[in-house]
Structure formats: structure tokens, C-alpha cells
Amino acid sequence: MNPNLILPVGTQVVTRVDIQDEALHTRGSVGVIIKSPQDNSHAYRVEFPDGSVASLRRSELTIRKESQKEGLQPAAYLSDFDLYDYVIYRCIVGSKAYGLDDANSDIDRRGIYLPPADMHWSLYGLPEQLDNKDTEECYWELQKFLTLALKANPNVLECLYTPLIEKAMPLVEELLAIRSIFLSQLVYQTYNGYVMSQFKKLEQDIRTKGEIKWKHAMHLIRLLLSGIEVLKEGFVPVRVQEHRQQLMSIRYGEVSWEEVNGWRLSLHKQFNDAFAVTSLPERPDYEKANAFLIKARRSMV
Image 1 (tube, helix red, strand yellow):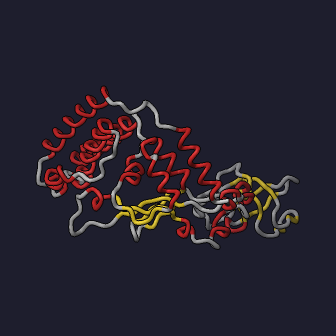
Image 2 (cartoon, rainbow, N blue to C red; image 1 turned 30 degrees about the vertical axis):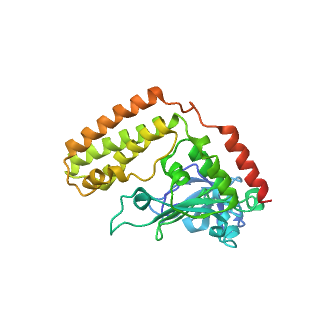
Image 3 (cartoon, rainbow, N blue to C red; image 1 turned 45 degrees about the horizontal axis):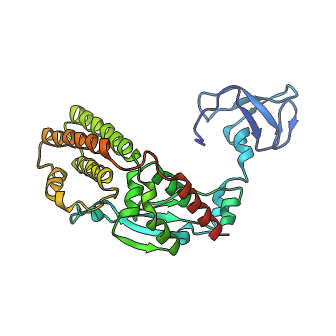
């Protein structure tokens, strides 16, 4: 909650301190704001159920709904655990995996974490993903990972097909063995839609800034190349060595925007053609994915 936010009239609040104004109201009393200040250096006017009114500083009150959440916040509970201890899969994706890295490229690690069952069953819940920007790492909680894979999220699908695997517990080996269950015609929608929306943003950047992020443009072209192969071969190609020279030329801004956009339009047509004849199912195999999740959950009891 933003502490600088001015709470509007009508907001129900709970007092954090004992208040003696028109009447005595002990800490935890409920009231409603009837007048808000222009800034938080001044007091609110709060009316209580008995009709009395008191002036309260922002530090002396809490929004009622927020007050009721106290004790249910996961931070204190999770502070006793290092969730990174429950990482069951770690792989390398990004430029290094694509074969599009250079001397300045970071190493992007992604994967899955699967905590004990009692943590899932607790009141406090768990974060859907663990992010460490300093080390370029991201680990999705297993259910989140599977859900994204079923939606044909390209980042997650590439985790399942990257050749650069650093850690894979036996459970993950089982998942990798059935990874084709996540491939469906949704790839066409997800990949195509993302590229179209991002190219519109790049075109806007050209109009407003006169420049674009060429690395991003390169990866959008790579994504189209990958999507076409998924529909044709039923496999996610992570490394794109055969296109490296062309893609790196885009990365370094050595080709014109018109050339890049022309290639993009050509690839969209190829994508359409591949979609028309693909043998991939219309939808992924939700039942097998769900069965795997249940098995994984039971393994952590």
C-alpha cells in the first residue's frame, strides 16, 4: 500500500492507537473517513459508529481491509525458507542458447521450483516465480510453469527444449520426456500475436524516437522462425545457427528497418502457410499435464 496515497472520503479505517477526542476509542476501533486532507502532513476526520468524530494522522489509522490481512502475509512465514533450495530444474536460455550471443551477452537461467506440500497447503501461499535480476535467473513454481507452457508461452517452451541444461531432477526428466504434450496450434496465436504487437511498438519508437532496440527486433524475427518450425516439425528449435549471420546483422543495426520489416512480413506468410497444414493438435494435452502436476505434488508430501 502506498503510504503517500490520500485516502478518500468513505474509506473504512481501523485505529492504530487509543484515541481520546469527543469520546474514548481504543486501538482497533472502526471508523469511516468523512474528510480527507490535501496531504498526509495534515489529519483526517474520522467518524465512529457512536457518531463521535476524531482527527487522526495517517500513521494513526489503517485501511480496514488491509488491517484484516495482517498475519496472513507470507513474508514472515517464507523468511524461514530459502525457496531456491527447491529448484528442480535449471537451464540456460536466451542468446547463449540461441547461438546469438557475443562478448557482452549475459547468461539467462530459467527453470522450475517445487516446494514441499505443506507450504502449498498453508494460509500464506507461495510466489508464482522467483526472480533474481542480478544473476539473470527466474524460476517458476511448477503449476505456473505448466500453465504457461499450455498457453504456448515461448519463454517456457524454450526451457523444455533448450540443449543447455544445468540441473534436472528425475521428476523433470519425466516432464522432458513428455514435453510434446504442450505443443499445439496455440503456438501460432501466441507467437504471431506477440510479434505483431511488438513490431507496432517498434514502429512507434521509430516515429517518436527515431531509433529502436535492434536486439529486440532480432529476437522477434527469431521467434517467427522458431514458430514456423514448431508447426512444421512438432519441435521447438532453440538454436538458430543457420540464421545467425542475418540475425546478428539485425542485432548490430547493420540492415535497414525496411529490410527487417520485409523479412518479418515474409515470415508471417510462411507462418500462415505452416498453420494451414500443421499436424499439431488444436489444443495441448491438458489431462496429461494435470496428471503430471498431481504426481509432482504427491511426491512432495
